Amino acid sequence: MIELLRSLKALDASGQVAVLFVGLFGALLLISFGGLVYSLKSGERTEYAQDNWRQFKRDMKAIWIGSTIAWIAWLSGHVGASVLVGLLSFYAFREYITLMHTRRGDHRSLILAFFVLLPLQYALVGSRHFDLASVLIPVYGFVAIPVASALSDDPHRFLERNAKIQWGLMVCVYGLSHLPALMLLDFPGYEGRGAFLFFFMVVVVGVAQITQEVASRTVRRRPLARRISRSFSARAWWMGQLAGGFTGMLLYWITPFKVGQALCMALLATSAGTLGGLVMKALKRDGGVVYWGNRSSITGAVGLLDRIAVLCFAAPVFFHSVHWYFSLGN
Amino acid sequence: MSFADITGLFLASLSRLITGAQGHWKGCPPTAEQRIYFANHQSHFDWVLIWAALPRELRAQTRPIAARDYWTSSPLRTWLTSAVFNAVYVSRTRATPDEDPLEPLVEALKAGDSLVIFPEGTRSNKGDPQAFKAGLYHLARQFPDVKLIPTWIDNVQRVMPKGEVVPVPILCTVTFGEPLTLGAEEDKGEFLTRARAALIAQRPAGGGA
Image (cartoon, rainbow over all chains, first blue to last red; front, side, top):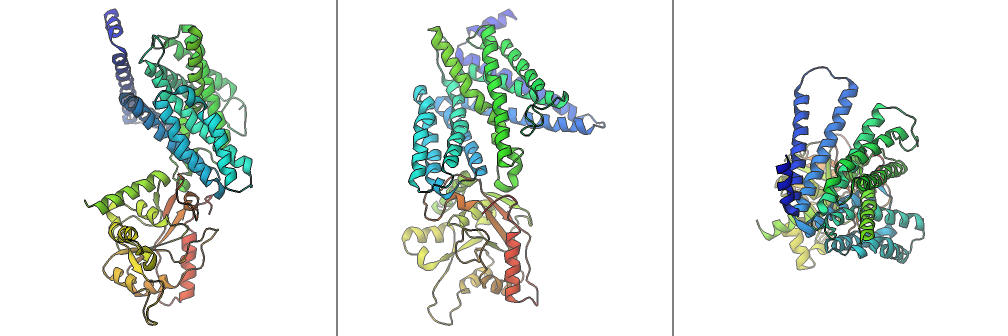
């Protein structure tokens, strides 16, 4: 065992990342195989078990797709990673805009958002201009979008329309662009290991989210915000946070953090992610949908936003915390 | 594969990227029988959207209608409509009083092709589609075996409003309804009203024009 660990240590950064992915896909294969065996087992199942089973299958599919995308992104280097996540971002933003009621006067602002700001943001991330990437949308976009909108000469619900576009950009483009940024981040003494930080964040947030979902199904508590989510309770949320934080502690060795720091970082990411998920739910209620995917018959939406909402909120918070952590150390 | 085919594929994938171009075959499966798809008309983009929503093997036999004066006025337009989309040209003005403007459509249908027509005649971007022109009725009378498919295009007016050139990415759907048949005794007005109602019935709930 110690021999094995030593030989792992001797590998260079990319070798270690490769081992990480082998481990990840191995674990996924095992779980999926377990699921297959379970599904072959005959016997009566309760409605509740079937419901859980469907949820499990949905989650597994999403995890498989997500891991594969992450793997391809890592393989294809900084350009590939930003192009890939950029596309994801494009689809998410397209879904978001479809559900918002835009007007004729928004046309130019939307063109600006889709065809200028979005590609520019990912180009900046891909070329590692993180300073500019973290202000492009909140500063420059914040000015440019309403200007384009004002020039189109439609004062009707002006603030509301621009706020919607800006907000969508922040979540779907700005937030998501921190995923490749995390992968590409190089710190002194931690070069080429950005993929570990990425992995750390995704796993921690994923564990927290899934634990919270399972907990809210099993321990019925008073929901915190009934009109937004009937399942979101403080108890379930805390259970998710604990599970996420604990996972973070277990994974501390793949990060530059010490155990306690890993716990704090994990908690930052999980709380931002799961609470962001709640915000997304509120937004869907506002738009009159229960989950993004169920309007598929109307808009052709694939429910992508549902899947990545949590990461959209966790990624920027985690990225900037890491950034801050490293600049403190130097 | 010719350059025109490649252009066609490119346009189809571009419109998929921008709108999703999801085809919902609610009332009939996408089979290779002879059909007239009649659709609501909101933008220049409509035809490309229907075309992209069709399975690839149906695209070659499904032809749009193009106004001859506009779509043959430059070499690019001519090439696009004839080589890429294999359009049926119609004249908007009659050369002689007894020329039948439906003649080219009749020929195309006789040759076994499927057609996509916009029976409103012009683009409308407010609420319900306008009253249908009589062409649909005459074609249905002459070709009782050709299936008439109501086809609702949703959301496309947000993608490219009248007067804009660059499309904005917004998800659109194309819903294909149940085939319509013309009753033996049914008169023109009755049939056109019924066809229009059948088309509006395909509009997805909650989606807005």
